[in-house]
Length: 316
Image (cartoon, rainbow, N blue to C red; front, top):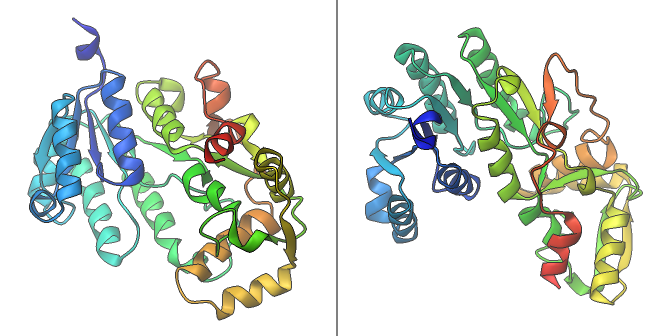
């Protein structure tokens, strides 16, 4: 039996998205037989995603056609694999309904050894969110509970903040880059640490855990030790690399809550997440219960990850 046959066959749903596409590439690179569930309309209507799917196919992935709204296509796809990874968005009710249908299909198919729900963010069971984030993300808890009640074997991955979204704007919800008018708005006093993880590393850790019995029915926390930063530290590091000072404008909690209340979506949502991380300290106050979760950077200590320092160096 060759290496490819020994590894789990993986189905990725949402494989044309930002995180999903990286999971696909990590799966292929790790020599897992890799399957993608792709909407037929994606190939017809989205030329960029069509090219992406074709590139995956050339790299060895198997393309299956269907979607979360087509139960029969889910069953057909699931029966061909050992592991299902969901990387779909959570923007609307249809996605929630579709993922509940996915859980039903996995349960009916009966062959899945492990399921990864579409999480890849903060552990919502251990954060203190304000509105609108609290209500908008509540469905993740519903999906998680349904998965557990159905007895579906699983691994849940939490990676907190993505490099690509937060670092170019130095943690600012409203900014589009670190250069906005020579100023940087800092939530709170800027001394609360948060965790920043590169999207490529999230994909690598996820795939690395697929056939690991230690992570079965556990939470995999991706918290690289070199990537814990306060906003003050982040700004100072950027100033050092860029050679320019930024004016730091501190936004106290009361003002931040008022800004959340007055802002439209998606800014109010992003500010609410910032409140959880930079005011409450929810990301770094979290303690891992070994019965429930494992630390990825400890479990896979030999896996090199991209540091905040390295990422910012590439932005200068």
